[in-house]
Image (tube, rainbow, N blue to C red; front, side):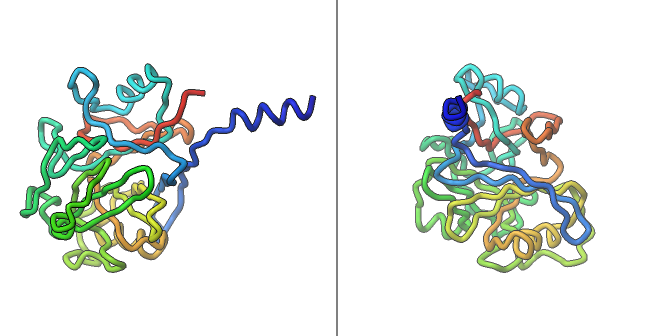
Length: 243
């Protein structure tokens, strides 16, 4: 009987390894969710099979449930226009829906250098936009956003240590081996410099990209984090088989 129970336990152990963790750094609260390759099924999502934007994590999860999948965790996947279409490059399962913007672009996106979060089943990368345009890196999934937070181990040169603009902020960083993507959200309003330094000093991540401010949200039923708000554009999520 003990052997039988053990076999069942192994059989139903989920293959995904994604996890979320709350922590404090320099008296500020954060939540970090990590996707690990090759175990985790991570994707970008924008529209359903009828061409309608998902907009909300719950709508996406309902669609995934029909496919026998659930969200492990999800967050906003980059900046978007008023109609929820992506700002800059957006690639979903090798199909490009929006082109790369090499100019300044609108708002924080235009605080250059900005960059591209590009990934497939084997590797995560964050590449500064001008370099990405030259390399023409093929991506299974990609979202362009900005500004870059950390660039090769250094904080974006335009960030001010005592900057007065403070918001809830979200971003993504990639470990040096390209096998982990860490999605970070501040649980308090902070400036760009504070946010970028968290990637560098606490998470030991050299390259990180800003995803957004006011719309920064996280959805993870396993960790009882179900943020709500108005509709999003791109959504990035780790998904796993139901059950």
